[in-house]
Image (cartoon, rainbow, N blue to C red; front, side, top):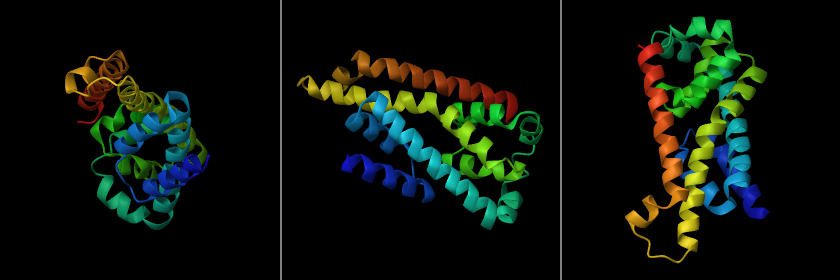
Length: 183
């Protein structure tokens, strides 16, 4: 329980510092398993992302609009139609290659309501985070089997190659979205 609380708080702080998520996702699956790892990391990153969004909107709105508005002007029409749905798919597809810290502050440009931001972030991050957490859990399973830890043993374990196939599928979808909508 203490490890869970420490990890949860650390993840929120990590999000505020705009750190890389992949190590935390793998660690979460490795230590807590697929289900609990996903619940813990998804909740913590959603809270952390929402805090970043609120702080950015309050303190950096003009700076963000100056730097990001020209690059993401095409997104405005999508956000105006249905901000929750579009941002959820944007998150699911990894922002079309947009780094997570920029994804966290981008909706400041569109004055997205905090409740909508929270819901879209939670639901949109769930599938890709599940895949990464499952990968971390798969690594733990391979180690638990006391097999020799080689690259081929890891890659050809069904606990590993299924999440890798899902990651590649998500990357392909992100590539298509980027080509179609983020020109």
